[in-house]
Amino acid sequence: MNFQQLRSVREAVRCRFNLTEAAQALHTSQPGVSRQIRELEDELGLELFVRAGKRLTGLTPPGGHLLPIIERMLLESRNLREAGQEFLAQRTGLLSIAATHSQARYALPIAVQEFRGRFPEVRLHLRQGSPQQIAQMLLDGEADVGIATEALSDYPQLVALPSFRWTHSLIAPPGHPLLDGPLTIERLAAWPLVTYDSGFTGRNRIDQAFAQAGLKPNLAITAMDADVIKTYVELGMGVGLVAGIAFESERDSRLRAVDAGHLFGINTTKLAVRRGAYLRGYVYDFIESFSPTLTRGIVEAALDAVPENPAQAVPREAAAQLVRHAEQAPGRLAEFQFSAG
Image (cartoon, rainbow, N blue to C red; front, side, top):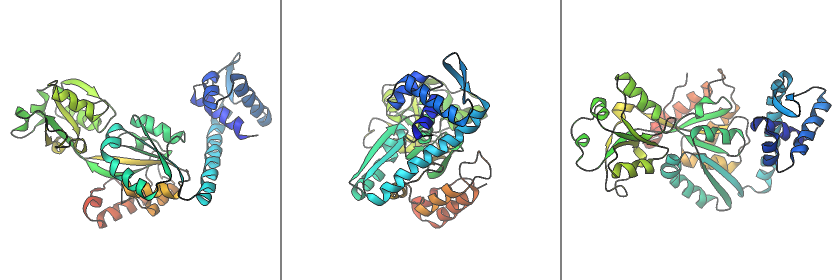
């Protein structure tokens, strides 16, 4: 048994049993992947895949049972390499961060700047995607840290920790009627709306607020990032709803903003790492730079704890500890909030 055989099984599953795509991901040939899988099956004495001729169509019951073990073995082999590098070169390496556009554009720059000043020899790789893509990057080992508002807590294989809270803002050109007087869901429903795609940056809260009022939003345009939304609002395509952190009065001088937190509630941006992953020291430093409440001790406690509920991304004790820290910390730290139960 060898790691190439294990990787071949894992990639075959990731590529939905397409061995040509699996071979491309592994930088080898399709016959080579088939051979690695067959050799492992012969050694184990059972078939891992259902076959139709030479084509793989799914996992057998034994294959489904053994796949998590294979994934854990590959994760631990990566952890072993990372731990070795920790002792050989403590201040060099690669930090891969996956974030949505809004987080990468508006929430990350200060933390990245601070981190680069402290660890100039660590290469930073910033990847952007949807919350679901970010979760998959973490699960596949392609990212060390993931940052998003939506979805990260839906994966029990991830430890998702609250980093900061924010509200939506209404944006519109100067003089727009919605900028004067109380902002209500009824007034907002009368105007074309430009906002985020489903599953991005608190969009679920927007949909829920309209539904609870018995109204449907007049969606003119939806987009994945705030910069696109602001562009179309400037062109007169409608009024916009964006994350409050995405509005910068100096840069967005042709727009005005009004807080809409009373309509859509408070959103929490989550920072996630893969459960069971070995994090090098500088990863903990970056996490704390981004979210000072998330100290190394807090993150390690969350990684080590076993969730009482498999769907609970943050274990109860780690959650309670974070709440205690948030309550004791001044200023921005006190904004951290989530359920410990």
